[in-house]
Image (cartoon, rainbow, N blue to C red; front, side, top):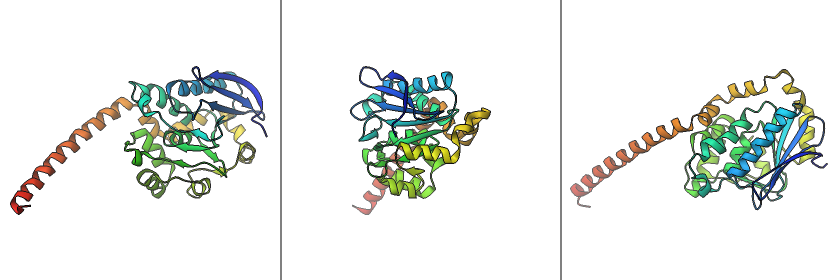
Length: 266
């Protein structure tokens, strides 16, 4: 089945667009394409937020599916240089993640290809994840890149994964094939749009927003992650103090080891 009837498009800067379609009543597919690999940069994030705003404001509430127009990648995550721009996390990326996390309709990430690092984080902000059964990996590769996880990034996995899977993702950087991701409950199913539509029908998800409490329920469910997303400045200050403390402890250890080495004549 195709992604369905075209509804509207939102440009992604000057190189790409978000196409919003409806394959069946009250089901909306937000498909993004920003070549070559859907990096999470400002234009990309803001275009998706606008598409979600339009759906919430102008269309009957139902279920939202996000996926990629690029076969190889759901997304290749952050552009690390772009991410260092002032305000990117608090005002751009976290705005997108918070929007998805507490969106007033059920959300499903249809992971059609690779989803690395920030891309997997984005998928985890959804309520459900369905992954291509035959190609693509998901992983957190920060341990290999030498990049620490910020509080909101780590929190969503701590809340949604078992402690063992959380450890494997963060400390080992394991690349999960779809079958392994399903086994470890990182995703909820395998397949493409047809399987997602069956999943929606089986769980009767299109009716869930009818009472108007879906967003409130999610905000309470995931309040730890929501708090981190909403208070990045506070967390940056806390992390700065922790970094200073660790530096002081490291200096003290070095002095002790030097003193021991001198005494031991090493």
